[in-house]
Length: 222
Image (cartoon, rainbow, N blue to C red):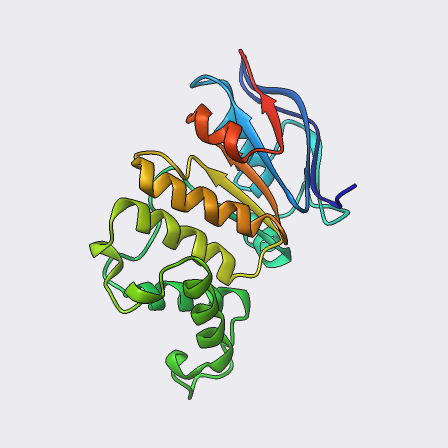
């Protein structure tokens, strides 16, 4: 059985009288794509926000790599090996594809004491950025401004930026939204490749894509 890298136990989130997530338990295992599906308002994005540390649960527990991280901040969880993407593009459109990935890599190993050295000369960050643009199929456009990419390429770039932080767990919130058939095929091929070394949580409304890629599915209702 695959290793459990991220676990949510009886997660509940309330806002006053509104229960957005009600006692949800979920395990994310290395080597699997675990899809979460459900109608709008079922609590899918709220669940991702709790797992990533964007806000705390009202009750329940989150474990990352066997550690209780329920009280950890989002940056601390990211440093510990958790990466996520959002429904909206979160890239730096004025920077090149390579620069976007290099900035993400620098966040993994910041070097504030090296004030005399240009960030562009950091060999570790440059190597990490090059590796992820190659793996995500963006090598041919790595010198292009991110804002000039197609929609599908921008979504690939977001995943590349996640990978540059060297995560073991990827939380992907609707990465296929707005894609055509060809772009969807490329993204699914990428996710199939990535799951070998990662645990992947995929929130998605494209059911054909979900049934093609998911090893397990959690359905959220009401």
